[in-house]
Amino acid sequence: GQQVMQIPQYQHVQEGEDFTTYCNSSTTLSNIQWYKQRPGGHPVFLIQLVKSGEVKKQKRLTFQFGEAKKNSSLHITATQTTDVGTYFCAGIITGTASKLTFGTGTRLQVTL
Amino acid sequence: NAGVTQTPKFRILKIGQSMTLQCTQDMNHNYMYWYRQDPGMGLKLIYYSVGAGITDKGEVPNGYNVSRSTTEDFPLRLELAAPSQTSVYFCASRDVKFNNEQFFGPGTRLTVL
Image 1 (cartoon, each protein chain N blue to C red):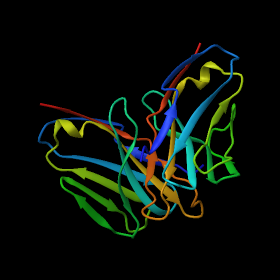
Image 2: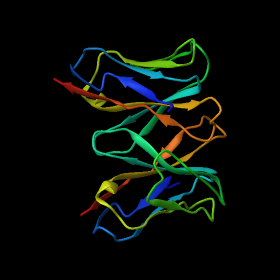
Image 3: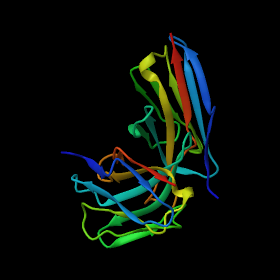
C-alpha cells in the first residue's frame, strides 16, 4: 500500500545541536505537511509545502519539499528543550485529496 | 472558537462493551477525521467525512462505525470492544479553504480490559 516513512525513528541530541528528520513517500504527493506532537499532547500543524523544490523557514526550522515531490525534510538549527516531541510529516497522495497519509514519525529528545 | 473538542478524555471498557466517542468542531469545516494512535506509533486513519451525510473508510475501519448528521459533529462508535482497540483516539477537522491544516482534538484515551 501507499506508505510514508520517516527516518530516524528516534534521535537524542544535546541542546544546541542540529536535528534533521527525513520523510519519504512511495508515491507522488500533491503537498506535504508537518506536525509536532508534544508528549501526551495532540498533533499541531507546523507548515504546508506545495511546490516542487519548495523551501520554507520558521525561525530555527527549515522545511524542504523534494523536486520529485516524493520526499521532504525538516531541519532544526540549534535545538532547544522546547523542541522535544514527535515530528510527523503528512502528505496528500495525488488522487486522494480527501485525506492525509501520516508518516511514521521521528521522536526528538533534547537534553542539556 | 473552542476548535475541536472530544469527550470523554479517558475511558475504560470491558471486552464486549460498546461506546461512542464524541467529536465536535465549531470552525464550520466540512472535512473531519478519526485517527487512532497506539503507544509510540503514528496515526492511523479510521474513518473520514467530507461533509454532512458523507462518510468513508480509512485504513483501519473494522470494529468502528461513524455518522455525520451535522457539519459540527462526527461521533465514532465502537461496537463489541476488544483489547486491540486500546489506543488514543484523535478527531480532527480540516480547513480546505486556506492551507489544508488539520486541527486536532485533545484525544480520548481508551483502555479495553
